Length: 354
Image (cartoon, rainbow, N blue to C red):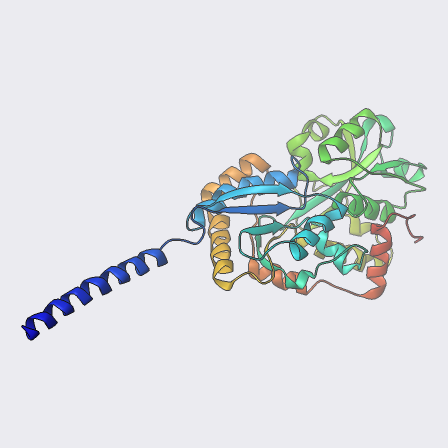
C-alpha cells in the first residue's frame, strides 16, 4: 500500500508540475505589446510633410513589433520642437508605451542653449529615422518681381515667412537671408503649418520663404513645373547630394565669405542630418528598447515600406540606424563662436552684421 501511495503521489506531482510549467511557459510567450497601445508623440503639426512621413512608417513599425500593438500619433507642435521634447523627457512614464519623433529643430535648440529647453538629447534612446538627405530651397513669389539674386539683394524689407522662431524653415530662411545679404528683411511668423504658409505666400501676405524641395514638389508641383515661384538657392544635406530637380541652384555655401561662415553652414548641415529621430524615453527597460529597435530596423528595410513611402511622401527612404543617429548627435560641432553666430541667426532679433 505504501509503495502504491507513493506512486500515486509521484504521478500527481508530475501532472501538477507539468500544468504549472505549461502555464508559465505559455504566459512567457505572450508578447509584451500584445493588446496594448503605443502613443507616438510627434513634435510636428498634423498634415505637414513631417507628419506624413511618420504616418507612412507606422503601419510597418506595427507589423514588426511582436504583438502588433495599436499605434496612435499625438501631435504636439510648438516652441520649435521644445514642447514635445520637454514633454517626453520629463512628463512621460518610460514604460515602453510612449515613443517620440523629435522635430528637426529640437536638438539644435538644445545645442544652441536656447531658453525653454528642459531635456538632454544625450539621454534619449535613439531608434532610427526615415530620412538623412534633405534639400531646403529659398524661393520668392513670382509677383514680387524678385526674379534674380541681384534683384533680391537690391530689395529692402522683403517679407519672409516662417512657421515660428526656431523652426527649421525659419532658421533656414534666416541663414539664406544672412548669407545672401538681404537688406532689412521683415520676418512673418505664427503660421499653423506649412500649408498655411503656402497659402500666405500665394496670397501675397509674404514675399519669400524656405522649404524642403521634396515637400514643395509634393504639395505644389506647379511652383517648379510652371515657374509659379522663383527659386534662388539651396542647401544640400549632406554636402554634395544634389536634388534631382533643383540641383542646378547655387548651393548656399558658395555665398560664404569666410572660414567662419563655411563652418556656420557645416554646423547647420550637421544639425539637419540628424533629421527627425524616433526615440525611446530615458529609463525604458532594455528588453522593450530592443523590441522597438529591432522593429525599426526591419521596417526601414522593408521593400513594401520603401514603395509606400515613395508613393505617399514623394521621396526615397534613406534609413538612419540607431547607431548612426547616436554617433552623429554626440558628434555635433559646438565651437562657441560659430554656435553664437548660429544662435543669433536662429533667434527672433535682427540678423547679425556680416
